[in-house]
Image (cartoon, rainbow, N blue to C red; front, side):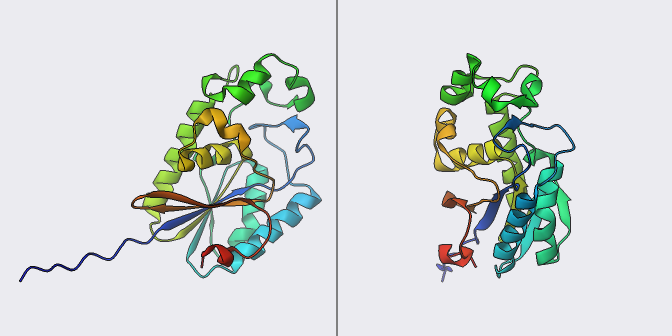
Length: 217
């Protein structure tokens, strides 16, 4: 007789998107990809808090980070807590803000282009830099590649606010023009389960609490 048993469902791959911890310029300057920006004391506290939350997970964990110092410094205690090597992936980089890199947010907000950034980001490219559409394609392609590489595991990916917001919008099926409505705080965890039938967003911008309460073990 034919075997009518259904194959066991493939396990979901959990991606924990972590925004780096606070720096001295958070909320004041648009640092972009400029090197040399490190975590503040509060940022290091946030990184340790994230590490403590991830340390309690039972599932196998791999840890990746954007190459920028603030991301690597956030990822380092997570990797130590899980006794894993820290892997660097350029796909997790901050958006390339081009000529706006290093600008004060209060000054940039006065530019006429600022309203385009907020209301029609899919049609905007930073002068000399990246477009939001390119950034979203980059981060979602990177996550797809990591999920394929580590199926059934938990992936910690330490990145930056805009790439994480773009990844969440993509997972939710939300148009990129609405991604500015998503808030991603420093030191927060956003959890997305990637399954055969599509992604499921488990939590966004979580800054405290037991991840096991989300059904993540």
